[in-house]
Length: 275
Image 1 (cartoon, rainbow, N blue to C red):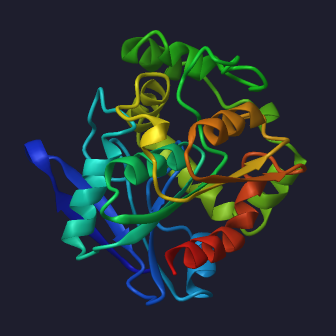
Image 2: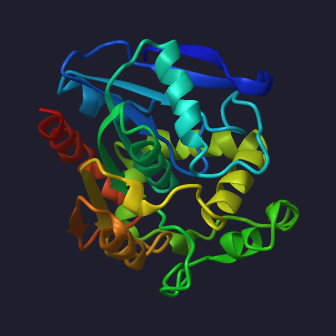
Image 3: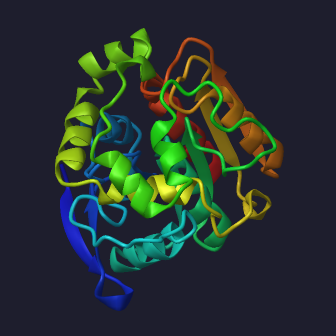
């Protein structure tokens, strides 16, 4: 399963990083979704190992042993990733992520152009905007609506909110019952550890990100399930319209979890983009 490292960053913070430690064709820095611990999941490792890819991940602040950082922005992930990459001796690498992890991967592509070769996202969140109905199509937008009112409101909401099963469609449940079962287990562990990481993620998604999508100059692959009821398809169309060098890949039957079954093809694309 690789090794874990505690990386010290500014202001005495610690980031818990994870490294498969194997693979010479490419290094991919994987950004986890909300909520996750940041640990490397078996289906991610399997897809990477089959392609000779070294995969590195880390827990965003508030997750999996990383120091809570209230008020962090999506863009703040770039400096954290720079610190992780420096600590592990990584020069150039690709970035990828699922759900909100995809949004944080875009931050690295925008703000670390000297390090990032390409970016890929699956079911990524778009920056909050009134250019389209940002909440439309979400089965349960209550958490993100609370986040619009600030961190304290989102914390209060966390005390009473339970996951809405209607957020997942049948292919999502099938993926969780199959190869992507470890994701569900990891999400449970992240949630049991406390709400801070998830709260700060949600507040970051609906606040200014600290960079513009136009700043992303690396190639980007945007994967999206049209049946997604967590982050609906309108989000990926907004990303596609505002990213300078993006490819859009829609999978009509996939929801928020089942889109992850496309990860092997995503890794193939990242390998091609790095050549």
